[in-house]
Image (tube, rainbow, N blue to C red; front, side, top):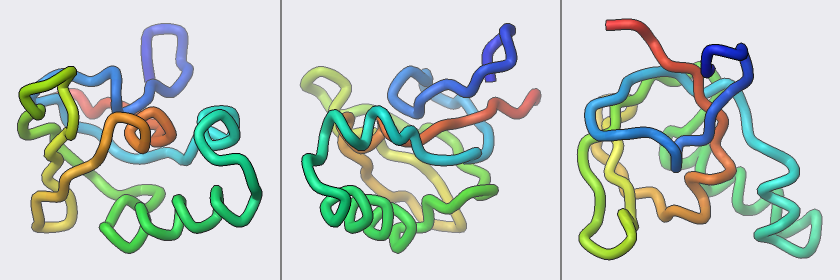
Amino acid sequence: MNSAGTPETLESWSHADSGRIVGFDPDALAARYQSAQQREQAVRRMMEMGLTVGAQLTVREFGPIRRDPIAVYVRGSVVSVGREEARCVLMEKVKS
């Protein structure tokens, strides 16, 4: 969460930022996926990768073009998340 107390998206984070997932942004999902079924599938896919509410993660690195994809360390694994999907993941930073 930023200083105003609102969650940030994973896409807006920097290298080595750590925190936990607080949810998925319904507006960002609606902008990316047209049908409710597509939105549900996208969230399910992210959850299968370990991106579940409450999961702790750390940004490891970014891809070479437009910072896409984003490599994150979550639940003992490094997974790659596209920028479009990262816009949908709401995060809260953990103070180190």
